Image 1: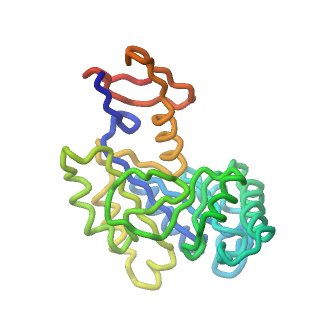
Image 2: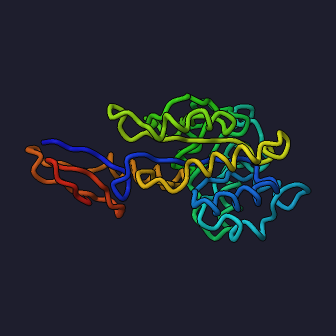
Image 3: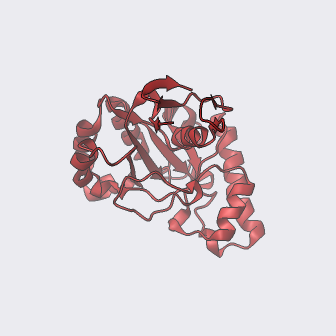
Length: 255
């Protein structure tokens, strides 16, 4: 039996953004993404909300509407430096506070300072997190094997150099994902808002690209990986509530 997976809507590529810290520059970045119809995930530290230079807890639900809110630790502590009780508190309390402020269920994370180890990963799993992002840019477009060790494609400064290759994807590369990460304050510090706007202009509105948040990508790929096939391949069952788009024996189907 032949089986070929697609992204939702039978798209062949996916793009997601991931931004840390929740500084006030997120406001301008969200407007930029909204203007171009792009989706992003914003990792917030609940303990710094309402402080000078950071977004407020009162605004986050509306500010990030259409985008994902995720955790980054209450106070942006080094996760690997924390005793177990404080590690649990750093992420459980962050999730609890962000859920209270936003009215959403929070299931995503990124590691403060890019620091993590197996203890941190195990702890986050036990607290209900579905993924966590590193800062180890890979320079490639591969689908991650382990979403708790999710390595992005590139920092936003390197994204323009990857644009043409991503859009002109060779046929041998299946389901490429361009995952861009960074901090919104960097655009203001480095004077690169124009660079980012040019990138958004070049990447938006492509009919074969799925523009998605981190958590929506995770949920879709987990649904696809969870498909159940009969021994002879003649029957396929999808136990999730998320439709999976695929080509089965040469015929496109929504499973």
